[in-house]
Length: 85
Image (cartoon, rainbow, N blue to C red):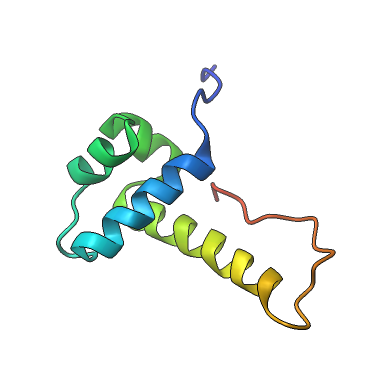
């Protein structure tokens, strides 16, 4: 049985998003994300399936947040995007 997650996905995705914005996708590797988030490589792969998965999850959060702030956006939305497939 896998042990429960002991990190805040929002914090991890926010730090990863900053790293991608600073270095770009191609300029960022898993070690950069690991250093920015404080998670080990194994934890990143287990939670997000690697660099591309982190980017997709961070983008989903950004898109969801932007939709809520958009005039006429669904402010009653209670469902956040999943951090994992």
